[in-house]
Length: 155
Image (cartoon, rainbow, N blue to C red; front, side):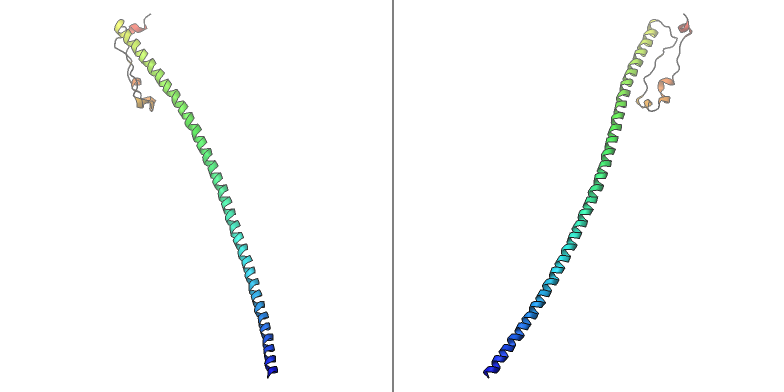
């Protein structure tokens, strides 16, 4: 009996060791599958990360291009504004000079009218209304008749 129990425990050790080897092999196989799966997952993750980086770089490039176009547009608009502002300054000075000339001419005409009586009827040139600069052909002083006597042309 002793020998039979000895042999039975010996054969169960052999079975356990075969079973352990099978179990170890199964665990190694699962470990390899998991390692392969992890490598594949890491590869996909790197690919997604690279695609995201490429997309961001393309977006940066596009935004830089748009930014450059906007800056160019602003610079052009600023130059046009400065040019128009300079033109307006010149026109304001010309308006002032012409208004002063008109005032001086009206004073001269008024002086001639009151001192000499040279003109039959009084001649005055009215300063145009502010909006007449927008429509120069409709200026008030262009529509007034000029009255002068024949004595004015005698020498």
